[in-house]
Picture 1: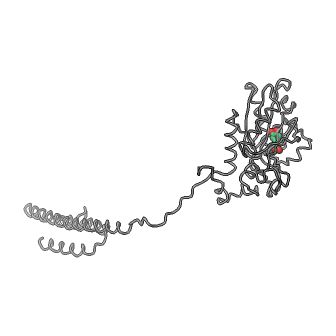
Picture 2: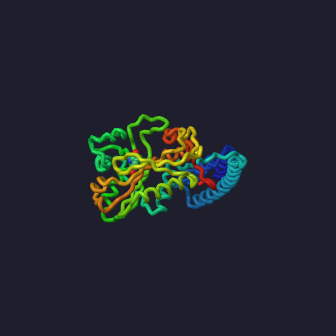
Picture 3: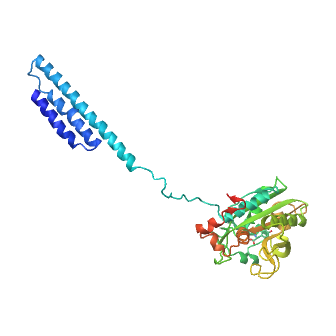
Length: 349
Ligand code: DAH
């Protein structure tokens, strides 16, 4: 037995030298001290031995187990220290290395203009509402005084989905929806920003998808003076108090009288330049007094109620404010372009 013990010790010394990692050591531990390990094997087949002999062998093998365990644990500590050291060296952080830059998103210029307009109208007591982009012909055209054969429909070449459904060509459809919904809540003032669609060939000033903001006020005794005052205030707040504003007679089937609103050119101040095409004026929106036919079909007695409405092109406002020449830039989503407009006066948002 003693000889066997000595042999095992020598074997262990040899094996310990071959150990390189804690994994190797764990394997060795199992091999010597495990349930089916070398030490346990020593105490097997003792049936023929006397009790005294069994006791002696038990004592010796326990002694051996203790000795081996001690040696293994010594090496274990050494290995742990070594591996920890290696880890510290390998995983050292170089704080002088250039960082990977996190890219931060930004507000789209159209969202920015739309928000600015919303805030402006909220401050004047308007509610912000929305309507569906897939609209019915009845709300997009018919109830806005544009029956099926009306020539003014040609100006708004539409994406029809069925005979009666289309992608809305104008946020004016929300005027109808709002009037039908607000029968009990007269008077009301709403703005509605949103996407609109027309079958236009895309070029620098046309996009088949674009954005509008619609405005509508309905009450008793609403006059042209209310329309003028409101839109002048809007033009001044969007483009600056120094801008002159003029109302030019125009035609829209759903308003009578109708006006287009021009502001004095922000580039030349009215003298005439390439931006205003020499006229000194820039058109910013369409507006008018709600047509009596529209009030009546939407459930408002035109003898008692009146209202004004307007429709602003969001891209147009953004192009004028930021000096952007091509409407397609809003939709190609080049981050270099978009981030350029992520600045506000007084610092970054
Ligand atoms: N919907 C018109 C367009 O897309 C714009 C417009 C003009 C809206 C006059 C109005 C309005 O509400 O009163 O060209």
